[in-house]
Length: 406
Image 1 (tube, rainbow, N blue to C red):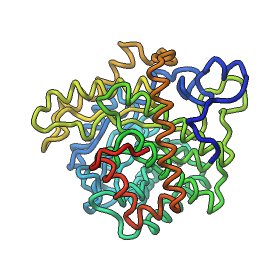
Image 2 (image 1 turned 30 degrees about the horizontal axis):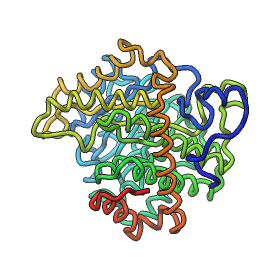
Image 3 (image 1 turned 30 degrees about the vertical axis):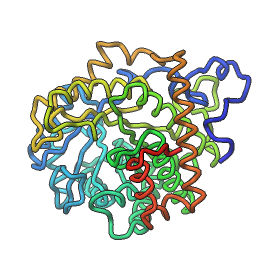
Image 4 (image 1 turned 90 degrees about the vertical axis):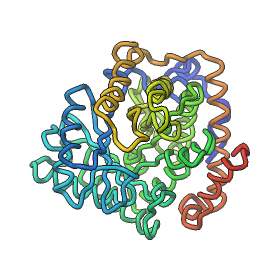
């Protein structure tokens, strides 16, 4: 994959020399102009009862959520918690009263993602909504699911099913992503920033490879993938990790022929194929002192925003407990909204631009993460490493021994 993203940038263009956002090496972010509100603020919907989940979804949209992250527990294959569903009726109840054309849905259903995405398609059909009118994300992450507590029976078969979903989305010209490369499974296992970047780029490359194999054009395949990153309470590490991840992923896309600008013009609005979603929640959530989680969530969300995430979801401060309160849900959503609309961060291109520390740390993470990715590729790729257990050993051993994964 060439020199790698840790190498110095080349080129003499005025935009590149100025570090203009939207141009490699992406140190100043992926966009030239901020989006309204700065980023897509997502609300997490995961109440086990579908009717209660629907009420929470409606409240979230009314309170300012721009999209919904809908966790589904289908036959025990969810992410530990989620809306209990046995078919399209459950999904329909969880989205009752939500205007799907205005509030896109991002599914999380573990190994059951292709099946649940089919259920959501049935809900859209029942409402008379054609695919091109509704933006959504299917959240198919068979490699990540294979490392979870409830893995699919056959990861290769699961990857094939998700690839078929990608083909259908492309053929229907649907406005959606299909694949999700999530770093949460690596982060929850204790992986550091470099290991998480290496995992994300390796998994994303495997999904890209699978779609290219069945004939999807590179730019189309790239547009069907979203990267999900863990937002930690280490503020600057989160900022640098997101920047480094974009650089590494853009390097992969460039290697398969995806252009580095949106339309070839001098000031692209967004780098194509680079979609980063951040979750402010995970291993730092404490069940014993939940009130501290509210502060941790604010710091983690700030790090994700300063890093230039495209979308953000904040976990409830009481998410590590048995039940999430209405207060926790409301505070989680409000955290992102205040950062966007009252702190003014959504009005700035790059709030940490010019910081030597952030730039240097981004370079270090990019080089270390790229080295991780190259090692996985040299060993035959992410699919083989997941299937034979080498990937899980790799992620957990680096944490257990305290070794630098680079």
